[in-house]
Image (tube, rainbow, N blue to C red):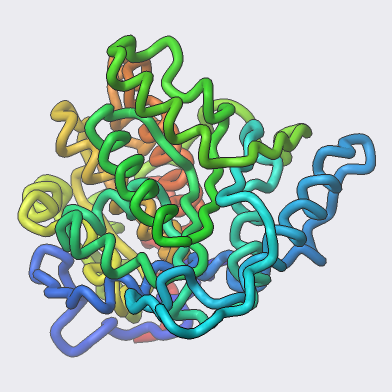
Length: 378
């Protein structure tokens, strides 16, 4: 768990840097294509997960079955790629790769360990790190947006494994895009693995009725062997209650005393995110150990809200605590947004921002003494 920012400030008692905290609004990272692909690995919080430390529920045999199936699938990934880095060897006989499905699909509810298993598969695959990719559905669509479709195909087609976590169908266009990409990769011999919360054939059911879209779903589902994972959610169910916001004064003063801090006003930061491609939000957070935001307000524009979701994902992946003033994080999306087609993304963002706000510590009530960290010697 991250050290609360108030504790960090108390241990230093001095400004985070000679010029004060950094500002995310002052950063416009330029990320080369090879870095975008190289960074498609499990996030830091999943660095140490393995099949061996996944603890199946003895009352849920499907969990043990999934571990066995995925271990077997990993064993099929040790041979040469089908296209050998894009160059077919017409006159050399390659040893046949072990038989197995072209892809696996982990289906199950929230909190049954799907991401743990997907990351364990990535770690277990007997292939060099540079020939394996792991990312969320959003990261994959952002990669295509940054590189272009054909370059994304070229960048991933020599991989042995591509893992897609949290497969989403909020946008039919993105679904067609990713379906086409995965089709190209499968044709090149790349093995695929994905997680979501519904069976492949049920993706998007009840939300979109376009026949073309349904055909895309059917074509995608045929590429995967579904593995059902039953079990109880080990995490808190429902929408978590966010901690009370800090005051503007507390945010500013604590940011000044926290090493590696960034300090931004919420509105200008949202404006800045519109000028930075979402594929670069990870680079935007490079070197930032704690984020401080002043004046958080409800987000009413959907495009802005979806950019905030991506930023929340990147901060959560890096376990960066967030201390903010203004509106509590469980109130930043309207009831209409939480009931709409992107509700899954918004609920995830609230859950993750709330967790990061808790990591930042509990603000002291106004009028009850000094702000957090003020007790340290100057």
